[in-house]
Image (cartoon, rainbow, N blue to C red; front, side, top):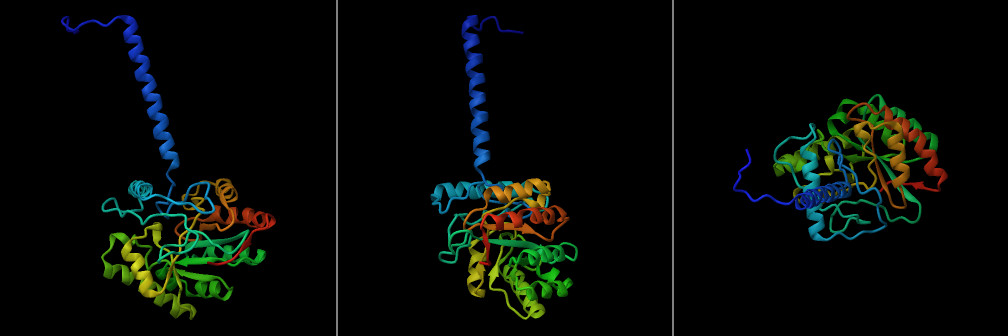
Length: 295
């Protein structure tokens, strides 16, 4: 029941208030949508990617980097494959062109049209051989970020990757979210993976990729202690989420440019879409004049 003591506004005033409120909601919606679109989606199962347009070199302010890190941490918390509590805030994700002071490498600086392809989460008995055959067909050398316990389970595959001339990167023992762990556990994850890869292939890794792209001061310090170059990426087509072969291929072709480090996967789930997308993308990148090398 309306309170009769409340002054009654003229109909015109009510109309203006309704229109102003509606306009405010529209502007708020556009602001939220714009902000959401500007946050690079980092693969919750994998690290998620980078802005769709990666500049040749970008500078990010401390405030912007902090906001981005908080947004990425919040995104990870919504993903079922990542623990729901204690999510780490990633180290500043700057689009640097070289590892400065031990910071992760996001892009290459080896001249025009030079790019890198990285394959994560293997080795896998189904998809790793398919990707190896594809790389051999086009004469491409890639970096395979391998999980230690998968190397122990499929040592023949790891040796096959190394024998084909590809680089094997330490990707922890169990694909652990390292910033959630104590320093001794971080060291164990990284040491066990390197030791196993060295024992199986005869070569000790010289690079490390953090699962989920979750860099922290402790992880970077451990990289320095182990003389491992921290390796990140600048093109993430989210193949881990299986968005469709066309979506994966279109993302790679749209966002790859000089210096790009492309993220793909041969493990962690069904990677048939990844293989199909690479089958389509690799010859087209070569036709565009790109040259593949390892970081």
